[in-house]
Amino acid sequence: MPTGFKMNPGFVARMSRDLSLIPPLKDAADAAAERARELAPTLSGDYRAGIKTAVGADAKSVFARLNATDFKSHWIEFGTSDTPAFAPLRRSVMMAAR
Image (tube, rainbow, N blue to C red; front, side):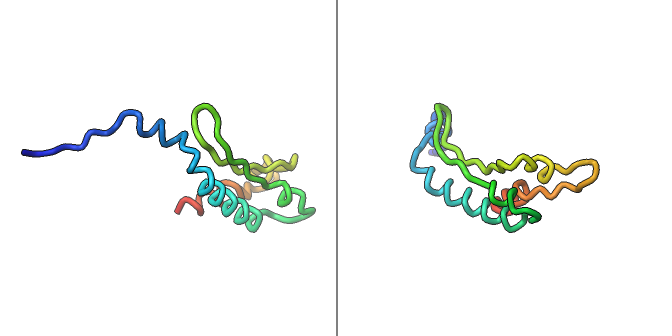
């Protein structure tokens, strides 16, 4: 008699709110932030100093965020008509995902 696997429909929703995921998410976010600081261009150091992580939980899920708080962050990440996109945040997260 064959047996089958039946996915629990609430599994993904319950796991996405599991607070025990916060420490590994923090470790991953901190590693990505460190890599982003290494990839960041340095002129004044303000952009590099403004790379921060945020880890926590809201009503829907636990989360980890990698933020750049310097006012030049958008230009450095996405570029301008005069400057190429350095994308240190995106590149560091992509490297961490490998």
